[in-house]
Image (cartoon, rainbow, N blue to C red):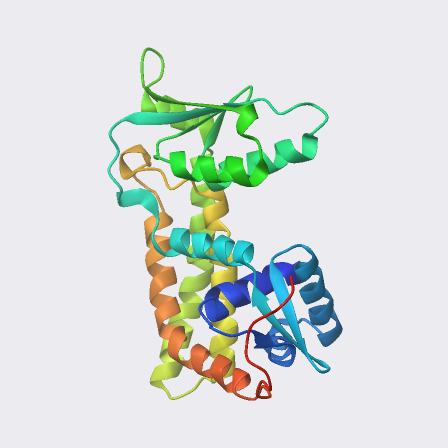
Length: 285
């Protein structure tokens, strides 16, 4: 089941990320309705995301407007970079970035947040609190440590392989590439027929802007899970039958095909919003 909060993140990330002004709540409700989110559910999730610090709201009379907070914008910009610019082609010099952490037992929630962030950064677990990555992620780790205030619990090193640490062996131990590849293959199998059918419908003059919006939304919403599970290892560490590149090509091609009519639909909805009576700015988190 799709969580309304995840749908809101996809909506802002793919359509509203670079807008210069807050979005009227009525527009957000209309854009979420074709995805099966009711008006009460939309209002509830937007309010909760303000409480969590992902969105900020502004009121003008009885009307509400929403925009991303700095934290929300940073999260989506990072995710978008990983979706559209995976690290497969970045050179690898054979060195590893190692991170050890020891969060106190009574701070289990914090420990879980550290693990989630490390997985998002592409780390794999060697066990016993030791994580490893082939990427130069020092800046990202420093940012994470500052955000979660866990610098005192971390120790970081750079290393190269020695006895019993062949790259293939480390990869097999730290990441389940077979399972990730299966997800990519399922994505390809599911979307190739849909892509072909949509492309043929355009040749025949069929298809609506709203349909294109829904198709693109669902495409992005599914594909945005891959940065959470794929460490984007250098090509030299990937198996020969890796489906990630094929899935990325399909995603980008299909997304480009859907973009013009989908963007046109979103703009048509946003244009129906009432004009602001006061200058933009001064919102509250």
